[in-house]
Length: 440
Ligand SMILES: [Zn+2]
Image (cartoon, rainbow, N blue to C red; front, top):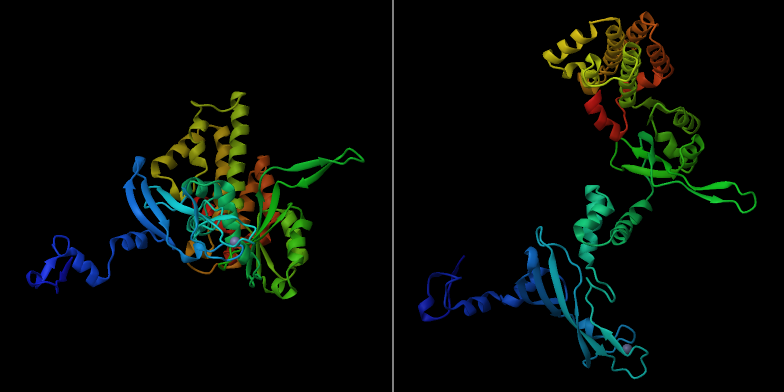
């Protein structure tokens, strides 16, 4: 760093500030005092850094004293006191410096209140970041809460990183989240409804009848904003149609009228709630679950066929067992060698051909789902989607000796309108869209 030295006859022109023998003059000219610089870098209002040392394990030991005029005033009567009762050393938790922890050692004074009529005899100093009886800086709490709200990690993980307890982080998170929750929900065009398992169910015995009463359901119903920035809109206990309808009934009629599409799992309960409370909205199902059902069907056929052929469960060494991982992959993601391995294995006998029929059915169903705009890049046509679904039904009908395929075809047929709507609108639940990237 080069500064122009203006003081002293031997310091004209530019000089290196670090090696200049008039360093003190430079500091005064620039208004710099090293102690204040350290305090400014530390950044806790009201604390003046007196010493910094390297602690064990990469920690930084920071010694500080109080430099906050209001700290000398009694919190009860406001009398400013200069009478020192004792000096105490506090070690509050603070934010890390880069990845290393900071060991803050705050030498603070316990003062005697000068007002004879004040009930408080002594009081200790405080600063805005560390109010009385507080051992964690406010900025550490805020940082931990931001880790949860901003990065989406759990309070437990944020607590481990901050070196504080779970309740501390949870309280900080709640303090940040509560003001947001009190704001009214903006209108939503695409609404997602999904179930979520949380904690354990709790029961209590009825003292009159002795029967157990459910106090807390482990299953919750969640509502998401799928096209906006609002994320999770609400969460209610239980996963019945009434539970979902109860939350929807709490919204204003204008808000319900604004919902155009509702995305759900292949679940009749939520479909019933959506049709009851949002009769004008289009119901779609998550395509991830549709593909997941088809993949499960292929696995069911493979397990039944292997048991019929060998009289036992499949195991390493069986030809069908060797391709079970390949059968769940998308056709377009198979290499030529992997595709040839499937064909060679399934072409060996009639058992393999049954598995092949189920595998082809899965791919025919995916053909219909892959007409959505995210895959093709163009707006899908309803007639094409229904045409490909018809090809899927035809294939299942040609192999009506495979009971699992008939069950799959019946299920898809029952949800056909919702599946077609999902392909046409492209609306899917947020978490499902990530999974669909892998499976669909
Ligand atoms: Zn007082």
